[in-house]
Length: 208
Image (cartoon, rainbow, N blue to C red; front, side):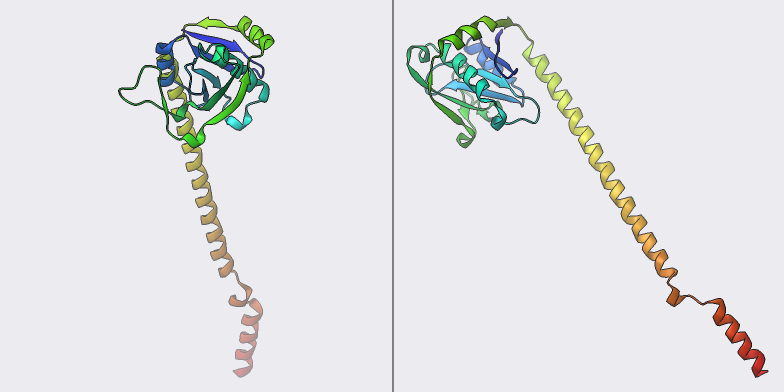
């Protein structure tokens, strides 16, 4: 089960109910998912699903503000503190090693982790977001496999498109080569004219 929230900006935002759900979300995240967590404290794993083609740079500030409120408020330790720092990074940057505690992660590349400092609880925002929270019971593996299939088809389509473009360029190059060869054959300096033939005939008649 996951919690879904309606945040400003119209993005899908969801979080695991507990560490076991967090573990499942780590395994079956989508390529567009951005992961949020209170820095150095226990907290829910909150995910923002970007639209295709977007990056972390495209996240609206109002969306970031809402997600920070969710992440802080539902952190048992973070909720008690006046200020917290919140890390966020693409879910694909999360690293899970054998033997790690359930729900725990490392980063593959710490340089791709951003931190929002001094996040303070905004009570009106928290109340607004709590009203939007709903339970969902998706089949994570099924959704992930469906997405993988779609992505595979998109890659095949792109590859086919690129191959067609290569063939078009080859055909164009071939035609240009043929035209160049034809133009050489039709060069006026290399062609005999009827006038030349007539002059030769007149010369021969006069000679005889």
